[in-house]
Image 1 (tube, rainbow, N blue to C red):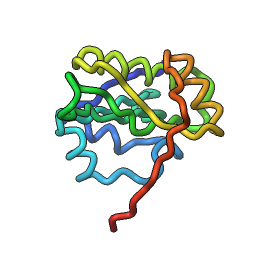
Image 2: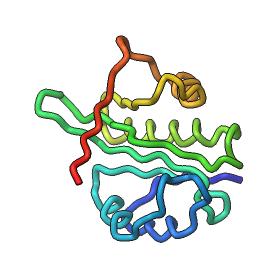
Image 3: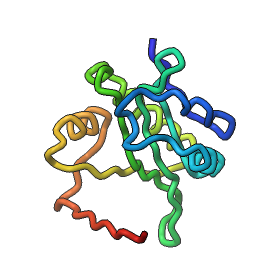
Length: 142
């Protein structure tokens, strides 16, 4: 049975046992600890026994011209052997419920239109496409 769990400051050690292809790169312990101790950062994981098989990371975002916080969903990943089992949807539901409890008025995420699996999952969890298509620029700072 898959357990969906919002991690807190004392949970970074759970990231020592992650399935292949869940995260883009290996976990950096100091970064994981820093991420989980920041009260605006969110990391929800899917655990198969003690193995992390999926995650969604997000940040509660506050801006001077907004009346309340919003949730920016940064990334979601599920190990390939666990695809098509509803884990991505469960992770999204958990992060959105946490955002509601945290007072967020809105949540947003970017994906590529060609990522049909992500598009379908975001729609199925209540996401609405914005128009026109946004364009993301990346600035390499180091």
